[in-house]
Image 1 (cartoon, one colour):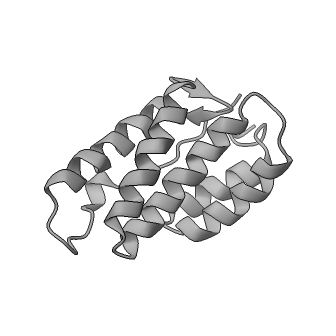
Image 2 (tube, rainbow, N blue to C red):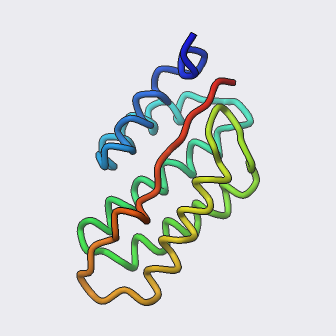
Length: 125
C-alpha cells in the first residue's frame, strides 16, 4: 500500500498541486475539503491553504500579501508539529519560515530560489 492510500483524496490532490507550483488550484482543492471538515485538523488544512495562497501572491509580486499569509499560516501550523493528518508539518513550518526570512532581504521582483520553495510532504496516517 502506498503512503497516500489512507489519506483523503482531496489532500493527496492538493499536495500534488502544491508541489507542482499550482498554488491557486491547491487552494481551491483544499478549500472545498476544509469547508466540509469538522475534525481537529481543520485549522491545519486552513494553514496549508494560507501557505498556498501566500506563495500564489508571491508569484504575482504581492510580497506584503505573501508575508501576511505565511506568518498567519505558521502560527496555525506550529500547533500541529511535527506531523498531523499525514502531513509533515515540521518540514512545512521550516520551509515557510525560510521563505519569510528570505523575503526580508529579497530585492523587489526577485524570484524565490527553487531551493527555498516549500513542498507539502505526505506520509501514511
